Amino acid sequence: MKISTEIHSAANHIGEEKAVELVAKAGFDAFDLSMFDMARYDRDKKALKPNSNPFAGNEYLAFARRLKQIGLDNGIVCNQSHAPFPTAIPEIRSFMKRAIECTAEAGGNICIIHPQNNETPEKNAEMYFELLPFAKEHGVKIATENMWNWDNKLNQPVSAACSDPASFNAHLDAVNDDFFVACLDIGHAEMRTLGTNAVEMILALGNRLHALHIHDNDLWNDSHQIPFSMNIDFVAVVDALKKIGYNGYFTLEADRYLENYTKDNIFEGIKNMADSARKLAAMFEEK
Image (cartoon, rainbow, N blue to C red; front, side):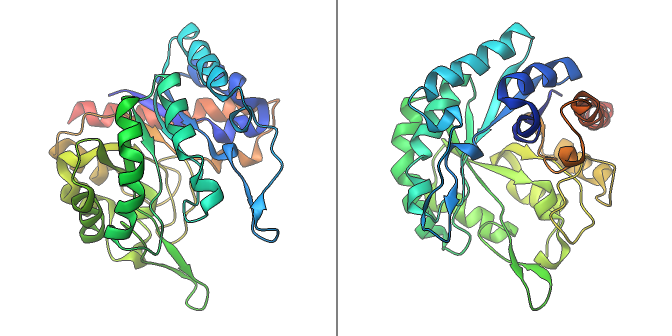
């Protein structure tokens, strides 16, 4: 079982290029190309924020190729990517094809594109249908992901697109294409007031599950911490993945874990992330 991680949290401290290098040195087999800074939206001004990130500029493909080469030079590959979000905002949605292009240039074969939280499977399918021909041209599968909303009055997560097995499979059925697959966010699935859990979701998705976002939480909040640091039962999660014959990467999205690190000690944090992912992989291999 190969392990990967998002690079956005490390890039916040040291930039994407150094992040790929240190992810490799920490022991990961691959990196998740995080493109959240490709498009950032100012809700007050109702416009995109000024952005100097290379993914937002004209040389975005050259930058994706640069990250791929840094990975190869250090013995790792790009296994998947994450497009900017929320896709409900037209100015951000206009960057989805760019995200797919960058995924292909970096060597990834899956691009996670969030559904719109509050739309039906049929309405979200319209967005994916617009993107699928372009994705196929570039040899990149699109993965949708289980989402959540937050009820401030109840102070708890509530349902959103793909947040339970029925909704997730309904979204996959509405598109019904081999290039449209599932990315299960383990932490989102374990926010208990959503009425499901990661094991149930894994078993319901079966061979439609091609990618993962792995992180830990307190079974209530979307904490995005490293596995084995909070309350998710990863033994049960690994058992379920083994049962369905999962053959993708174990990809961490513990992006809040590095918030308390600095550029001077960031490698220590990345190494802790890799160790937690490797422990998960070993559990899977021992089953």
